[in-house]
Length: 352
Image 1 (cartoon, rainbow, N blue to C red):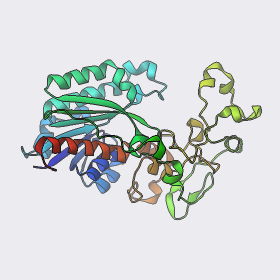
Image 2: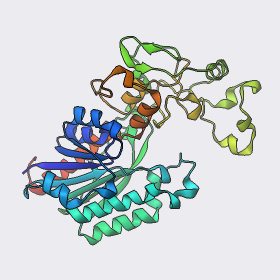
Image 3: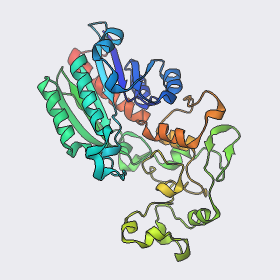
């Protein structure tokens, strides 16, 4: 008896790699972005199915990847979460976003493949939405035991203040996420995570690591960054450095832009624009620049030997920002895998 997981919306494979690190075998990943294929297949060693999930036939998945009736079928995924994210400026239009319906495609594939275990990772705000409530009701109607919780990533040794909704469903019995591994007293700090990397300036690329590269900055933005204090806000700046939007009533709530991180704390949540200092608190604690690709990858707990590119000319800030920012942190994927294996061990009385 073996585990066999299929990862929906797999991207470059953060969740899949975490499952593999835990000991769960991943047989395939599905994503519409063909640019993820190299990283996924090279690092995970599983098939990358480049296809719109609405065009995926569950019966074909079973025939190709779950032919052994003795295998534990595991279906996992993180449906694109922008319609539900508090960071999205499209929140007010979430009912009209096509991405909203991808959770229903997840539900359809569960019905067509009848996996033993399901896990979904997403933004915490999803738990309050009608579509999620319907998803949970659907799982229960199919005789799944369901649990979900809002996970604070530093509680599991992940060095960023990311909060995620993690759902588990099993046909075998109650399933829960494993206990927290860290407390506030021993959270992994930014210094511990990325402090070993060599210093570079804005617009530079480290000679020994092409992923350790930082976006360039205008002279004005460089002055703003230099005026930023760790965990401070633009209120620390002199008046001439402030943007027009800061003076508007709506701008006063966005105090983290051009914000500097603190060495002694986990980082802010890594988004798809971590390389852009003007999109959040992404300024290095002591260097006058935004985070590099390498730093963001480490904060997303990708190992240093993860293959993000085939050729060095493929390294570009925007597409890599999307791939890394959208990924499930590898170590959160590992926690999900460990939770699944602990559940199976409790049911079968042995480690699979």
